[in-house]
Image (cartoon, rainbow, N blue to C red):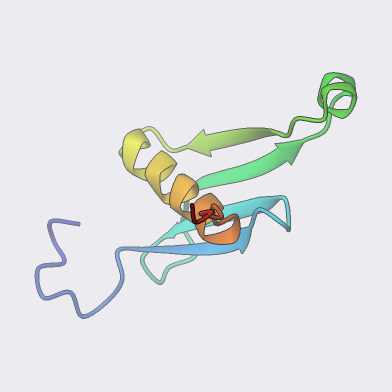
Length: 85
């Protein structure tokens, strides 16, 4: 990110959604995948009704930043309804 001072191109590109059960995060406009998330179906998740996701992040990528992108994606797709008093 530090090399992109003019911000003429994107640093990361995210493809996929939670509804598709996966997403990939690419370095800029390249085909280099720096992180990916996939839904994992297990007996436990089916019985408990909770989704489980596996996230793989390259070792030279800021893990907190990638997790933040995934949380933002989740929040965009699952907005919280605010009830008025």
